[in-house]
Image (cartoon, rainbow, N blue to C red):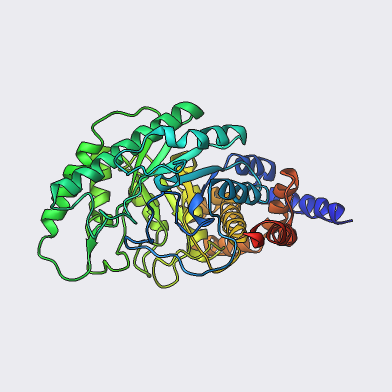
Length: 417
């Protein structure tokens, strides 16, 4: 009975959208090609697997102590596979360097090689998943407040070497999967209180980046992520948005838009058209800031919808990479993965179902009320029936039916950790 109702609802939606010039079959194919890069650190609260690991530090924080966090690579991979089984489509996995398979060895970050990620490469290949990567500058004795911008050359050189090695690892991953691995570089560098050395810190960061990017790596893509501030570093951020916008533009590097890294009234969506004439591509880190960079689970809120709509309106689908970046330890972590991923997908679906061409023509003709009318009417169109069809075709639960699946996994797996 439910299958029949879903089919009927989709057929009605298909006809409704055809009336406004939208081919839902084409949109469903576009959704099949829409690959999220799921972040491995949601499953374990950003702890990683370093033998010498310490407490999470470096301007970020994970809150909550919901039971069942992954404690090792096997548990992490199991959780990720469970989450992926409840998310329609085929998706990538984003690794931080601290998630290497160190096999009980103490491996400092300036010593890491692809050897410690070979098991991840094999796992990803076995599960038809592509990998992305991140260098890790936080939660280390040499992190402090400054890493790549540290006036101490020995510390700066340590992080330069770490980042170079992460690029080597990323390139090896890209070669192994025959698809470029996207490596995001974010450093927390900043000052807790007032500082008079802003120019010096930024000069050191530029020099460090120049050295890091000297080696050409054909099977990986570099991207840089700015921020307003980090916890304990509220007064000054070395790698600010202005700094990285200038650097990426000058050096033809991908810029990362993290939706939690802007002032509360600033629109990440507006950055899409502002940047794409000057940088080759964009990387997204989609989360939900609640008054600050609190990395709440992504939902279908207005900022997220506006971001995906702007990408579609800009004709930039093939120039944007889509990553998630939230880490909520206060709720079921697999549930967080599924809610956040499906919400991002729904925002993209709604953006693809918008009659943008017609609305654009009205706008250029000066018929403003029609623009507003169609934008409002699009919100009430039966997009949910199209997303349900997307789930059906990918053999994943429709609507809230994923909840019992997560409860079963919690009972049988995570609650026993």
